[in-house]
Amino acid sequence: MRRYAFAVLGVFVATLMAFPVHAAEKKPYLLAYISDSANASPAYWVAKERGIFKKHGLDIELIYISGSTRGVQSLIAGDVAFVGAVGTSALYGKLAGGDVAIVNSLTNTLPYYIIGRQEIRSPEDLKGRSAAIHIPGTAADFALRLALKQLKMTLSDIKAVTIGSGSARVTAVTTGQLDWTVGQEAERLMGEKSGLKVILDMAKLKIPFQLTCTVTSRKLIRENPDMVQRLVRAMAETVHYYKNNKEEVLKVLHKYTRGQDRTVLEKSYAAYRDLLVDDTYPTIEGLRNILDIQAEIEPKAAKAKPEDVLDLRFVDDLKKSGFLAQLGVKS
Figure 1 (tube, rainbow, N blue to C red):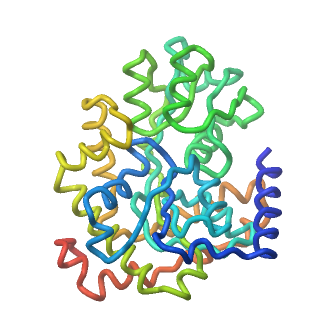
Figure 2: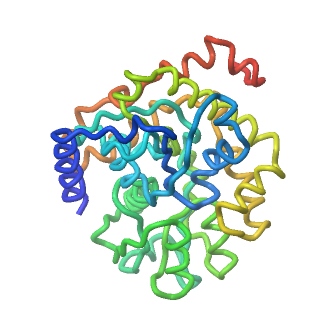
């Protein structure tokens, strides 16, 4: 299934390269966030709602596109200027021929849990059971494959059903349609509140992984590097704001999660705050881990390097210019 998905993405990219579009050149610039979870995209919500984008002279509108793979496809198509994606999708887009680049990072670990019904006694008991999964190329997809690898299983050992977003996956399990799923802190809390339990805590493993990062096109970088730099600065300031303004941030989370329970939001806030990277520097080791997993099913990944999908000039400037020091970030 994943070979097919990768091939389809390659055809998609090739078609777009033959017929270039220029939607990303229009203003306001669109930034796609790829999840309605309070542990996936909230920094972008806060940057928009608290006026941090505007403070840096940016006219940014947010648009919700479920899943990083679709978000990166929209970026390649020129429908959006930026996407808050996961490193897996950025790498897959690059391997498929897309001219994309990661310009900063927000979270650099894989804080996922396997959660499921009470009758599942152990991780090994997942074999043969039905699982709610996300589309290929997403962080949830990577977490699932990594967990199965640790358990000496593959997708063929489970009954995988593609559902989509974290909240939808948890709902599919809590309503009895499926047996288990993977999710972050918000999904764990949502599941436990509905009677599910944690079967495997991947967060404790602290695996380096390029989770949330900002991806854009190299075309936009060439044509408007100043705007990209301002976006990177805005996100660095947002990280600082997020960590120091709990109540204001919770109001934003409440809005974008459509009124999720405050207790859940507070725990999600705390978990995400601890994961946020102060200097917004991507993890090369985390990208290498992604390539190692992908190389098992895609030969191109074995020859690729993390640097192929990185443009670090903008995060490097945060330190060189003294911007991080102004925010109180120690180098």
